[in-house]
Length: 266
Image 1: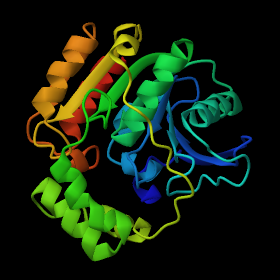
Image 2: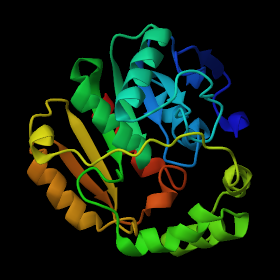
Image 3: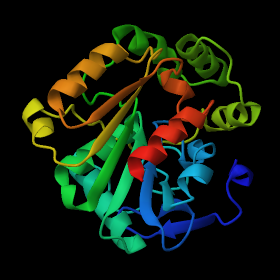
Image 4: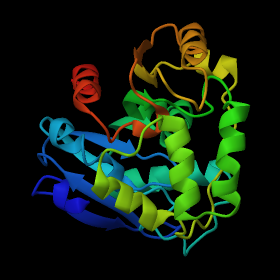
């Protein structure tokens, strides 16, 4: 998948007390820093359809989340909970020499980014959340039920069936499907569960925020999540992408997504 990134992409291993963190960086070195966090069960490779547009004005840092699949190796201090995950992000920024950055996350990555913005708002100048998981409302019971077999006994067939149920169509990009297949049984050392933020925490958030929701998401009721986000983050911009599903973000048909992101982040 890295062959589909801009030619200037660099693979960095940032040392932290939790272990080395893999970061793929591209874009002008003097550009405004932008940190990208992928959805659960994927890696920084998920941003292949976005980094060219985002990297025109930003120095993009796409991170493999510690404890999940990918090349960030949790061979140091254990990730015991949300506090360690936040401390890990502090260490990643420090290791990259960044005081502050703009942030964008998808699904579980959006949940991490939001939690970090609430904990360390001085290090988050702007925040984009792509169909965020468990941030404003919980997941659909049907989604959890359909995802359980692939979670308990992961196989390529089960994961493909789950994605087909959620998206309603086969994955359009054969290369991305091959990559997803390859990560099905990859080791995940510790995926830290994050609780949903309390309403008072969200109402106190001062970071400019964009919430982009997949209108056809089966992860949750997108319109209900949009209403909750508008109520809890009254200064946020909340937009529905009517034809998107949870698992087609951000990889399929990214033109409109990229347009909205670049306009918000500019």
